[in-house]
Image 1 (cartoon, rainbow, N blue to C red):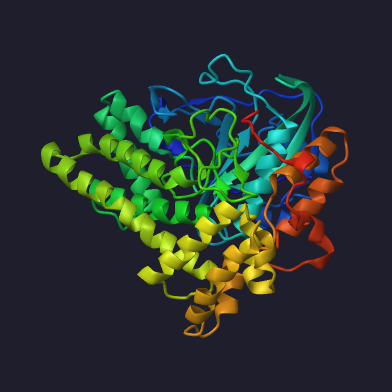
Image 2: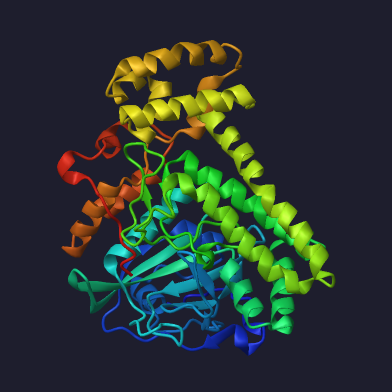
Length: 474
């Protein structure tokens, strides 16, 4: 059966120095693990019932009609150090489609073999990170947070060598509003390629922000999107783990799920990423890091301005105002988590006081907030009296709200992709058992529903199950 992807490719029309055209490297024995049929329908993909055809195409063994496979080039600050050339070292953009909502979407293979940007890597991915990104990105979508999506996962029938040893290979198909990053702008700015930078700016504006009239307006729009995104991350206890500028999307989506994790026990300086030795991207630092990343974006935009001294002054003011915008978004989302529809200054203090008590009392982040609805929040604390002292003030404040339970139910998920469950799912899949993956996908597609039959997936890890470190691993 023919698989029809209605490609309408535009990035491939940019100058050749924006990318390298190449095909994926075929794999030995592709086998389809997962296919996101609802997303495929949204993208206008037809003929997706033949699993063998899907496996061949989304492993990279067969390029679908209309595809223009290419690896994008970009630069980036990685843990604060600038790399003037990075790029898609294990990914290929197949092309773009315009979905049923009129939105242009990239379709990208991840783990499809080496490219000129692989930096001595094999360009492949193993099964664990592919399934982690599939589960977490789809969970983020269900949680209502802007994110890339997972369309397909395919086993390759080959072994990939990583620190654990020989692991089963896999390829993920990712869907994004685009893969334009802060690092994409940095690449052309660092080369003083004014023509390339202008072409990138014009393309980005046309694709993502057609209402924008100047680089300053684009900067302001990206600030707005990223401030809201990071506040949403904080509201669900999400830690990206590798917030480099090449992982900061201009579209405002969560992108590149490497050593990401969701907090169990709350503490503001929680770090899971094995490569974040100094806690640069700790939970509470994410709001500061995104400002730093956007400052690098602003720097890359300066050469587009005819009066660069005036531009520096204007851009600096926009970046310096970003923490206040993030704080406003934080107040909004955390007020909702405690049942307050319109947040005031005193409500931010009330939410902050609860978080301080949670950190001291080693309370589970997700379960504590959900228990504000269900009852039993005090049981999450080592010393329940710490919650009792806060609860009286909270109840008094809720008396002024029309429907606090509805507000909390919309803000506090019952289910997140808990780290130990993700690791257990990966271990089972490596052994050939995909039932835990399917179960996680089913439950996490409705994270705000009670789902009594899945109560075990809400349980924090036992001492022997705690995940202390997460890894890029692809």
